[in-house]
Image (cartoon, rainbow, N blue to C red):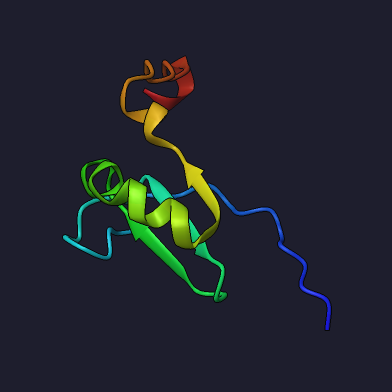
Length: 76
């Protein structure tokens, strides 16, 4: 059996933290095949343990501090 990891899609506002329900900024793909979503707070809190069981960690927390794109004239 061959397992192929497909590129993860970007997290959206619909993706919620499995711990508290806030917007998720981290996706943790587990070695066992499942996935967990975490807000930035819980991602930092559980990071040491998650690294032990993760096949991949998708971290989009930089979006919290990046400047938002400016809307074009026709979008205003």
